[in-house]
Image 1: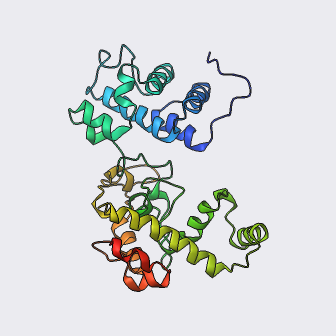
Image 2 (image 1 turned 180 degrees about the vertical axis):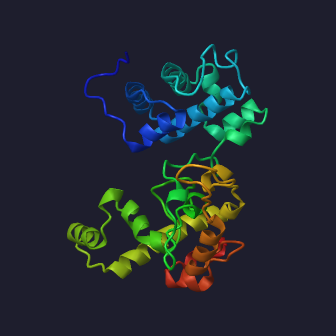
Image 3 (image 1 turned 120 degrees about the horizontal axis):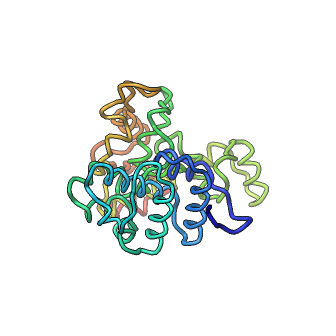
Length: 289
């Protein structure tokens, strides 16, 4: 039914989740098709799938009609409509132009209470990793929920926040796959390629320096991540009444509070202390704060 070239890349987890489960779409060939469309146009499949799901919910709740959607019946599980609207989104044609910049701006353009269905943090649709399924470990606080809000680039499932994320920042900066993040092997590979002799602690400190620099850049531009509202669905407010997540709410406030203290960042302004900046060799950025 769907014509995409032989040898086209098959969709991976994020794409299957955003264009599949999020849209109540079980037609895998349609997901392969939208994956091909997004790859051709250089469009992120997480954001695109989330935006299509947002549009479907707006349609199902009467905020938009077939007149708005150029005659496309944008209902849950309608894989033909999902593919058609994704093509319009990619080309900024008709209603696709309303959706093309993501759910935040789409909700602003639609109005009529559409913000209720626009799931994002800082304008970024979050990854397909539900923080309600990833409770932090006491003493390390992985901050699965807080990373979506507090990382310098919000909403990313491949970024992190807090001491447990420092090696992850170093791994990202090295351009290596996140799935190959086993510490001692990563260091061995890095030292072999560069001729360095980094220890695990030194590499973690480098990651902390990266995380801090990214954050300080935002602070200089007037961005305090605590000011970014978190859509209640992301953390389970109000929690589901049934299913595997019944009664579960991610305690994002506790995660943010613990990690800010652990990193020696102010819990209101989120500014790193001067002592912390000096420890990281970043005395030159103090003036920017």
